Amino acid sequence: MFFSVVIPTYNRLLILEKCLRALENQMIPADSPITGYEIVVVDDGSTDRTVEWLQTYQAELPHVRLFQQNHQGPSAARNLGVREAKGSTIIFIDSDLVVLEGFLQAHAIALTEAEKNLGTDRIFTYGSVINTCDFDDPTSEPFKITDFSAAYFATGNVAIDRKWLEEAGLFDTRFQLYGWEDLELGVRLKQLGLKLIKCPEAAGYHWHPPFSLSQLPNLIDKEIQRGRMGVLFYQKHPTWEVRMMIQMTWIHRLLWGLLSLGGTLNEKTMAPLLQWLIDRGKPQLALEIARIFLNWYNVRGVYAAYAEMQQS
Image 1 (tube, rainbow, N blue to C red):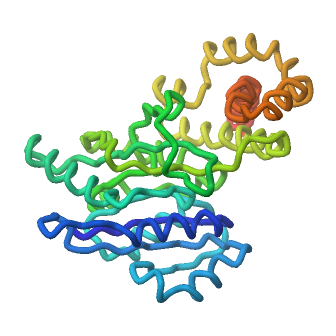
Image 2 (cartoon, one colour):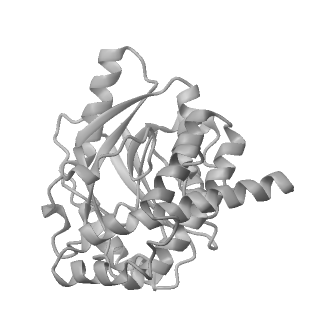
């Protein structure tokens, strides 16, 4: 089993360094099914000296192979990474994920045991993703209830035989805005009969800066983008399951409309409360409360994009 860890990156240099050094520090026992590994970094047109840093410290990152493209989004970057990968097994992680030294071994053991127990190689493993805003020591964060994910295929931390990616058709590069490109590929993988194998031992620590009010414009824009990409997702797979995933149902419209009081609770009216929580050392709680109106932006974005689609 030769692993190719595919990492798209765009202006994430500071945390990317921690990500890559953790991957270079993997412990692989002598009896491991892993015969070797590489780290395929695809720079998606970064402007923060990412490429220069990688070239400067190449000797300290012997497993890293760097590829570059103009800014086209993570779908195109991951596809390039898969095409250039040498491994038979692809691991996708994001460039703001820091892993433990047993990360690769945990995925390898889970894949090997699942194939033996189930009698099929139509499987992929999904490692846990733990959110943290501790930049100095990201792997010290405990697992929280808010870290739970019911996603079938999310590229924050998955390992899969490349043949299934190729048979499914890789990522759809029309997903150029934020959101859904990995879950849409997941629908196609599910149609091929692939089974998700949870692998919590392959933990990844997803770093993000502590929540502040200055992040709200970008978060709102992401929710609107996610709404637009959700409609593309639904165009490809017009099912009730996808409608539920992208929040394009009367249930979501009613829920987030009521909770946000029809948009009355928003980034302006909620700012004093959110800042009060941040000042008292509770930025994560502030973010969870902000998700009330962020979800309302998402639902409105979905329906606006859907209306545009019907008119075109």
